[in-house]
Length: 75
Image (cartoon, rainbow, N blue to C red; front, side, top):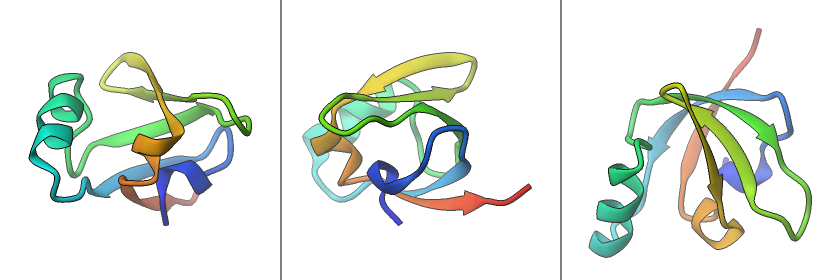
């Protein structure tokens, strides 16, 4: 599942970040890495996705969220 498909208040783990080197450097520098646990705070259409990861609130644009594969954690 893509990060952009997750609902608000959903929890998950980052499975993969794609293969684009420039994107990888940028996204990992802000704390989003493979295996990181996160919570989706807000996911409204046509707005950035707000994600809480590593005690930091990140606003990710929807195009970037399409590149991030995640696994939803139930419970």
